[in-house]
Length: 207
Image (cartoon, rainbow, N blue to C red; front, side):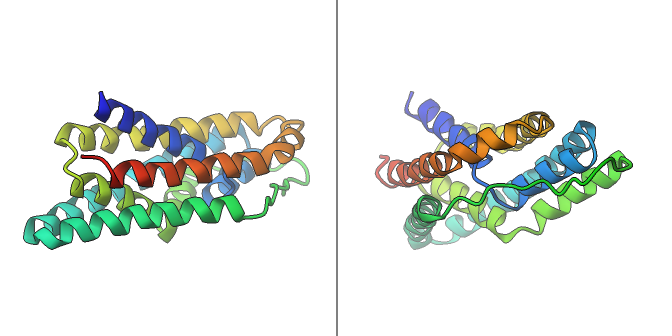
C-alpha cells in the first residue's frame, strides 16, 4: 500500500507540475493558440518521448552509480530529495506570470512531425526536466523502491505528460479560459510547491 501511495503521489505531482508555467507549458499553449489543437497534441507526443528518454538514462545512470558504492546510495537520496524540496520552495515564492497569447490571427498549421520535433527538442534539451526526473528516480532507487515501482513510473510518467499536455492543448484552445487561469495561477504554484516539498520528505523518511 505504501508503494501504491508513493506512485500516486509522484504522478499527482507530475500532473500538478503542468499547472505551473514553464517552457513546456508555454510551448503547448503557444502551439495550440497559434496553430491548432492537433498541433498541440503532436507537440505533446514529442514532449512525452523526451520524458521517456530523460527517465531511461536517469534510471540507468543511477542504478550503475548505486551499484558501485554504498555511500552513493545515501548521497543520492539526500541530494535528490533536497533538489525536489528546493524546487518546491522556489515554486511557492515565484511570482505569477500569466501566459499571454502570441496569436495575432489565423496561421497556417504546421506538419505533425514539425510539431513533434518542437515538443521533443524543447523537452530533451531542457536541463530542468533532466534534473527533475533524475532527482525523482535517484531518490526512489537509493531508497530501495521495488523494481516494479520504478517500472510503472518509467511508463506512466511519459504517458502522464502526454495526457496532461493534450488536456492543456484542448483547454487553452478556448480563449476565455486564459482569464480564469490567470486568476488562480498563484494558488496553482503554491499547491505544486507544497506537494514537491511533501514528496521530498516522504522519500527521505520512508523505511
